[in-house]
Image (cartoon, rainbow, N blue to C red; front, top):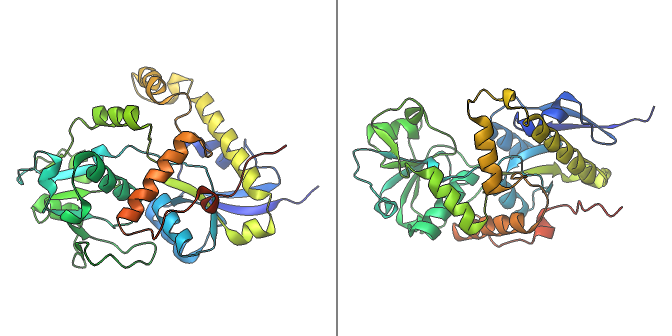
Length: 321
């Protein structure tokens, strides 16, 4: 029996990787240990700072910066996490913020500055809604995954140890909060907190129809030493991720899988707007535009020293057979 290469894969517990996790899809020549029991921020930190995993779903923003400073990673164009972001700008309802430009000069909280969600939101506010990121006073809670010095003209402060940006928003110490996840006050319908864009879904659909961008949050990074030792691994992994995603789409054809009364209606609506494969992998036209836009925002916001080519960022996984 031929011996397989054993690799660890750290990623979210998504339907798209279920077949890989359960073993019904097996990458050719690879035995995977799939680790899903950690939050995104912990996974990103452990991969960027400690390189604990052979393969990991990694913040696209962190990956861009890691590549720029020469950390030993490469990536395959497998984008396990995407999310529209208009609905993740939260306001204290006492602050009289009615439109995006009202954020200018305000105190806005962040978990950290580098998070891909926050990068997208700042870029969208700046380019779509005329809110320059340098005209906001940013207050961050956490350390950054990649070591970085903020530009001198960026108003960015670290909040006091033990304080939390969500509570500061509720208490009115912050005027607004940009956050990658739905915050507790929104989930609990706290009247002190609301969204900047209550009609975020309509705005997101319009944004996609105008731009073709379904924002990429994460890519799939591989330690360079793995690629150097086994140069065939990236293509085989790419093929397995694609096969696992197809299995997920097939599974979702059964409306009983998801406990939503109108699941099929919303799935069909999504297909009408985003197409049959919204989570498309590879470097096709739509993904290239999305990545170029993200790099533009990253460079404008002082995170990325220069825009890199896609050949620099991704292993060539084109199957020439």
